[in-house]
Image: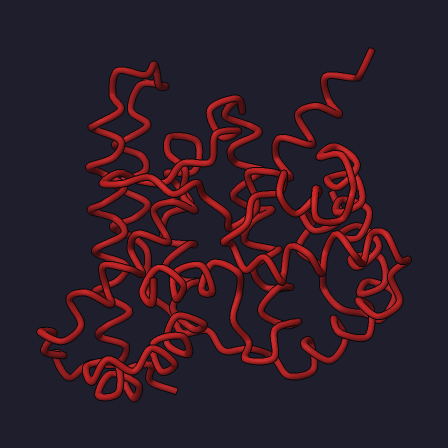
Length: 76
Length: 192
């Protein structure tokens, strides 16, 4: 049996990614976002903010995965 | 740097220039939406905001003050967030959440951000020191560029989703620990 705290942690980790499912004519929510409570959602916001900074630092052009995702939508 | 220096190229539909603009605009736009974080998926709002800035940029006339396009982005993001909270009002939320979020967004001062070259160097050094599996998971997220789900990234590495996420968590924490040892101030959530 897994610890619910571990399950919450994995949900936060998933929601903190820049990936969002392609949806026509609607905002692209991460499916796991709906499973988080208020505390988890706040943590996912902070986690995403911290990760975007790391991603930009590791990208040759200084772009986060959020920026890359938007550029893909523009060119797609 | 005034981010509006990139505006002429953006208005000529230069996606590379818009990428550089977004690199500076994304952090303050995201931060301006902090107060909505428990109500709506802010990542979705940030991406939609950046997309809409690209769409309206050709018709945008700056007001002469610095970072005009960034300030427009903050306004677009706030309006999108408010619309989304109202649309999803059927979901139970704490009383006055929207009022609090609105007040915080109104008070937000659009700032400029620029990448720190020293920090970039330190993060790259720490990334190279990661053990194989955690580094693979972190690298896969970077290469996925927000276009590939964690489930697909895990599959590409022949990992189960939970294993992939556990490796990613380990990479994040080890990276934070390495940076802290080098005297870099760490966002607490990076090592949580």
